[in-house]
Every structure is written in structure tokens, then in C-alpha cells.
Length: 203
Image (tube, rainbow, N blue to C red; front, top):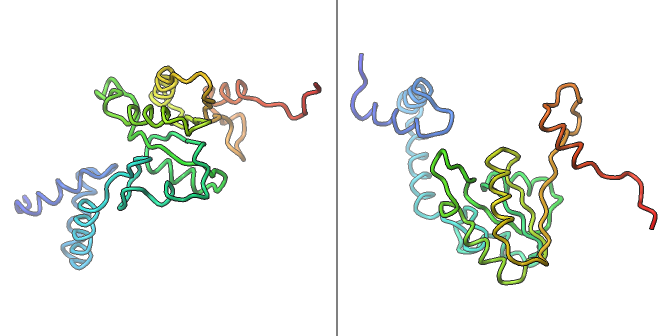
């Protein structure tokens, strides 16, 4: 048995979602059409409105309905502290910690020559232009601790011309509550290399 052309088209469209294979897409499509058509129509309307109205913040490049997102427009934030991230999801994760009061810049991915993603495909040029304005005193490179994320952070560091700009990298180490025997070697090596003193240095 084969599905009708429109149903097959819907199944194929649902496969664009991450982690959704043929069987999952098929179940989703059949559920929406058989059991909840009103939800399907609402989903379609929400998708259309989001695609038409949600763009990028002109300052940090996160997803926003306004030219400048609420975080960038917040005068209570420290606009001299800039955290560079790969995606809006990473930005949300940092913001949920409640411990960061600076502003953000979203690259929109990471360097990946295998996938054909180079510096021109990310927001690196816009980031460098923002740094040239002289408002930023510290740049936090918070790309993911992957090979691609490390390469992206290193590339950005090489492009920075201002020798007085403080550039830092987020620490990678053992998660809170983790046990050393279950931590992979790379994470443990990072934790040892990034160790900090528990006692104040005597001057």
C-alpha cells in the first residue's frame, strides 16, 4: 500500500526535523490527520507566522521578531562583556543559569570544512566589526567543546587585531555530581589543564 501524493508529501516534509526518520514522520502525519486536524492547522499557521515574522537580531543574530532583541535592548546588561555562541539554543542555556549578565553574539554554527561551512557562512565578519567599535572589553568564546567548536574559537582568536581586548574561553571539566571513573579522557584532561587554586596567592 502506498500513501496518497499529499500524504507522502507531508511525511517527507516532517522528515526535515532533526531526529525524525521515515517511521516517525509517518506516525506524526497520520496522528495529525486522523486524530487532531485542528492541531495540524494551528501548527501550520504558527509555522507560517514564525517564518514570516521571526528574523535575526541586528546586534547579536539570535532569533527575534524585533530588529533588536530584548536582551540587547536591556540597558541593565553589561554591554562590554560579549559571549560568543554557536546557536540560539546555546544562548538560552547560558541565560537559564542566571549567572551571566553580559550580552551575546550568535555565530549560527561552527566551522566545518567537511560540510562546506567556512568563515563566510557564519557571523564572524559581523562579530569582528562589532569588536572594532571598541565597546567590548572582554570576549568570551563559548563555542561547544567539540573539534569544530575548538577550531572555530581558535580561528576567531586569530582574527582579533586588538591586543588589549581580553579574550577568554569557557572552562571544560568534570560535571557537578560526576564521578571521575565515568568521565572521558578528553574532559578529564581539560579539567586538569584548567584547574584553579583554592588558596589566595601570597604576594
